[in-house]
Image (cartoon, rainbow, N blue to C red; front, side, top):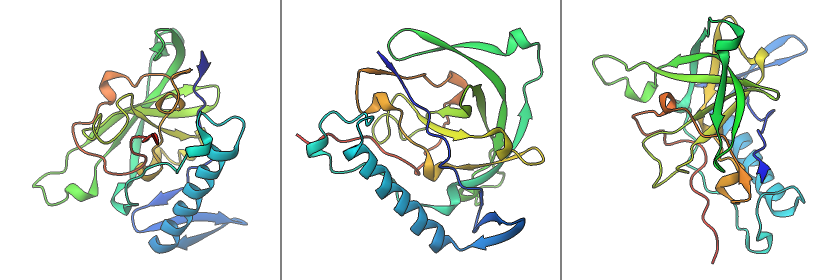
Length: 215
């Protein structure tokens, strides 16, 4: 059974309304339109990789027509407050169940607390919390939301980060880049299952949808 591969390096540093990047030490801003264009370009490149690469999880590459996504929505680019997990080194270690019945060991790094701007019409914004795992590739959030399992993969979706993506206790969560693990496309892969506390009670209509195989 092959293990799922975390996809790192695809996360842009973003805030609602603009993307902030650093170029030779200077901050520049990119419009939402440019961000959407870049995101769509990356999605096309991912389709090409899944269709052509020998390491693609897609078994039937000849009939692969591309992945399915929600329309990019800037409301799902949110800045979260990171609360570090304070405990002994042993208590931080957690056995995470895999889809094949085995388990893998990750470390509880902390929690990301955030609100969703599209809920701003409510009298009081709801604050959501997601557990962040640390592993050999970096940091990841494994989560489910109310779109699963009808519209998004029932086994959960992932967000990946590098440790230095956290700046002054803040971490940008861009749900537009939430992706499916390899086991969503191919049962020969084993993938870590999101913890129960990472089930959001709301719909996150951003990122990757269920993969539809072509008959």
